[in-house]
Length: 226
Image (cartoon, rainbow, N blue to C red; front, side, top):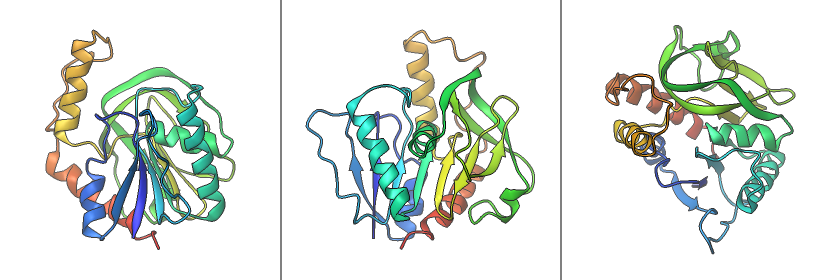
């Protein structure tokens, strides 16, 4: 069994998704369409799609983003499982007709994510009671796609997770990040002189707990693959 994962930058890799895929015997073929000459894998034979994050805007008119949107649209139409994270969630929402736009405020750092009542019965989030403190790093947000189930929210960004149909998911938060990924993002932010960080971020915060949460949720997504 194999999934196709769309990457947009080297610093936003599968992270904690990879151990779940390994545990469930799922191979990965990467689609790095932002690179010149990169080939598009066979999407139709994939068990599912994963769409990673990145610093670009889902509305940017880059040819590779347009190709990704078409791939997502066709995957949803075929009933293939899809998982989008941050930019990936915005791409999934846009691909099925929802609007993507600037969030009223930047959401960067550790933030509390709250689960909706619908999440209590969701295949991925069932059993999660209280809020979870998860990593955020985004300027943009999206409207819920028509017919989608709202699964999570935060104080600064209402649409933190959704499910469309039985197996298409978008996560605005970064459950996939490892401490090394977070440290890398913070270092890039400092070197580029970006103003996002109001205070230092601890990359190691709740490391073991978040790894367990990622194993649970990403493992449940893997169970949707056929």
